[in-house]
Length: 275
Figure (spheres, rainbow, N blue to C red):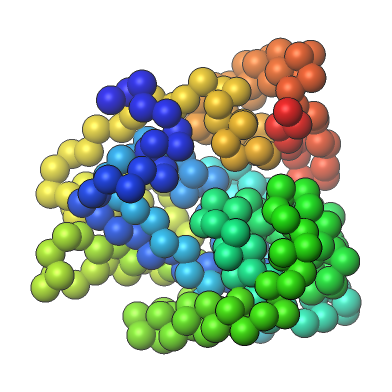
């Protein structure tokens, strides 16, 4: 079981006992900070659950006075305020763009969302600008022409409206929120709103499974980078239980092989897979 490839753990179509609905607002710093925790959960316990990502569309990040946010456990550090006057001129367009990306596949949508969040939280770009969204699509490996057609299509709009309907139906009022379901339709799900430590999510998995789940070992470092494309040093340290110094040394090996590039920001060091 521990030799299972990362794509098999996360994307396998085989029957799994749990389903997780992850409600996110792409403009919310806490949702950006949740992402590394979800990745770690998928790596260690992805053979137990399927994951459905839903855009909550609550615009939490615009409606609440943001406080400084430093989330060391997740591997993402993001300070505030990030929402300058023109940071997001048309917030719903960012969500519709994500649904347009998902029309090219679930993984394509996830990669695009991650790239969009990087542009917003690291580069302070206006992610409702069509040029920025187009660049995100290109850098995520999407078919840019198809993406630009889809972003103006009724299909992307309807997909976003469907997410909003699910958000309302499940009475989700905050982003991020995760709802855990098991195979028994008659059982209610467990809803956890907000951002918590990784151990809390594992504990809920255990409660839902009614057994102690067996975690898988993390994949080889290059496989991890190849699959997720970009990661912070702190996230890599958390995934592999390495010291910051050891992580830097291992990433430098990939750097010397020209398989990654190093991105230094005021929020920490990120690594991007470039092969």
